[in-house]
Length: 417
Figure 1 (spheres, rainbow, N blue to C red):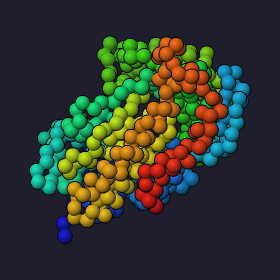
Figure 2: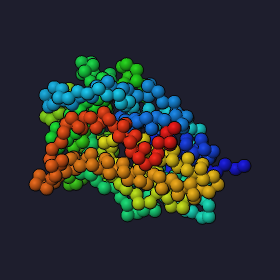
Figure 3: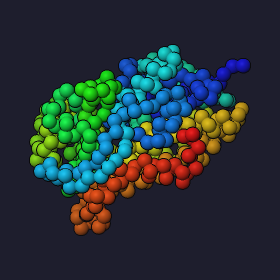
Figure 4: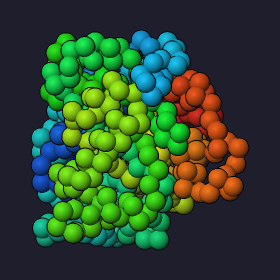
């Protein structure tokens, strides 16, 4: 009997989990990634949740303590580097490339094809065909659009649905343990650390190193610093030294030296000195924060998943978990529908669309304080003017419980079993 074939557009974490889940349900799967090189060097820190770990194990990835680091304490530093708040925590913090490598290595090499930039999709009868820029094409009974925030798949079916800028950016920095002064590393390695200057938010923590190791001496440190930036300033930050504007995101090597010098000076003036010192030793880059809600997830034999379907701000640290839940729901829905692929896809949309919308709304609410910094103070609500620092720290400590509650409320708990 011929196996049904699925095409997955997008070879990042969401696409790889989808490929594994579908393969486990008997599908033949081909992953098509537009980049010509593997993505292992991309991405930095990554928060995990029990649902993600359970789905990874379902996909054949044996997630264990070696794939992450568990800081025992969460602290908030003031501007002078003194601890304002301290709470115990049990979050497992991993690295994007650590999961990517594990997922990719477990997939047959012939199932992952680089340099396949999607141009358009055609459907006829019960088949779907993906056309690529190099003139090649692939055909199957299902196509999963897992190609991220700027999804080409979504663009064909929902051209008017675009990411909405949230009004702030995330400066990111990652640095090897060996490059951090030993006294600073000893102070920070066991901390899930916050700095909360007025109108801003910074989180930092240790993660697996560039070779994905959590061994002493081979780890890394990750910093995420949210700062309000209006659209005109964002356009300037996204313009390189040659005057070229990168509207979809400037590659880190092209960020102008004066921009990097300015953010390092701001770090020294604004955040705790021990974290500022680490930040200034790194090569920081930034990502604009967006959110997006798709009104529809299924178009014939095409299904959107992960960030191609919903883009939630990163405060819950649940983007990868949500993509994994999408993959598990899709695979399970198709299995339960048997030969009726269309019925399986309908069930997938019925389950995942409300969950995706809720996740976006929850993260919008958490980021409202940051977004509001661009409004005149007279137009801000009380919550936008003032925040409870203790509540911010507790929200991060309790993040997995919050995600679990959302999963349960939408009837998705069985997906992680």
